[in-house]
Length: 467
Image (cartoon, rainbow, N blue to C red; front, side):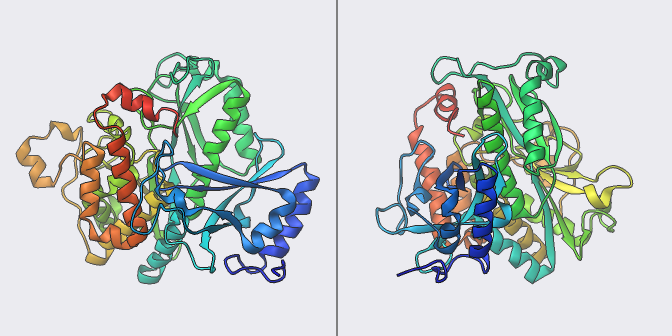
């Protein structure tokens, strides 16, 4: 008979005792249930919940969850690989108590990200969080690198009273317009209050370019914690909006026209606690390793888009001249290049200098996206890669000769093209491992097949409320 004193391997030392103490504390605060959260290969958030009194048992031997969701599509159809997608097997969800958070906008609930562990206590090869943690550890072991990371969050706010399936913006007014902020003032204030209560430091919150669109920028953390925070903040945004009778979408494109919702990644590499993106001898103060890291990402962007822009709706957003970064180009504070070098405010480069990777949206599993970006960057560091000539202005204006000279080419224009590039990228596939790499390919191909023959408007509608 299994007891709390004899847990199945997979938890962390001391977690049972911590969970027991936390359970009593949370119950005293009126928390009745714990949301155990992860993100599947398609980028959909999945959860199981347990009563607060069962937190200790969850920490001891996990909570059962089928591995079938590794090959679920965004609409809950399923595909298979040679090892995933069948009815067999089970996994255990182990909550990370370090990141357990009481949900300010969902009274009675707390939230925790999970690691997915096989029944024998070994890491599940399809777990994106485990993959990201492994990649970060590899960076430290091989190159002495650590990272600060933040993901921007853009979303569209619609009226919950709109006809079924349709999007009617809940706010009017121009991009960055004061009108839009005023119209949703109470909701936005409650969102900021909820973030403070949950320990999320918000840098900015403002109206964005598209109708009913807003953006939140949050403080940078280590990559695993940053991915966790992205999932938590989206849960919070959705919950706050519902309490105000509103509906939100993080889909890359709620409409076939105009600007879509992005999830730009800000990423800085450090060694011995010091940023490699400032104070160096290369262009714009980059160190040699910072340049090589950026070049590694730039060179693999076509394949990376299968992970960072994983939905057919992603390609409705990835259009030239809309600041989505659809060319393999980089530039200093250039918002049309796929990689934007951000040096930071004068005197604050050590804290602020970073790379912004723009062809990323919130259909992406953040753990897979960050892990693959870091893996690509590490390959660049290992080979001493160099950046080509930088681009200023809109890359679409470059003539063919200058574009070829700088290696500037259009990123994949469809998910099918992105998957083809990903299938041929040995570095990314090796970093993910065969089980997870095959799941990525199979799920993307399933998404593509599901929208075959649909026009852009119907593609947008198909994914409008999936994310």
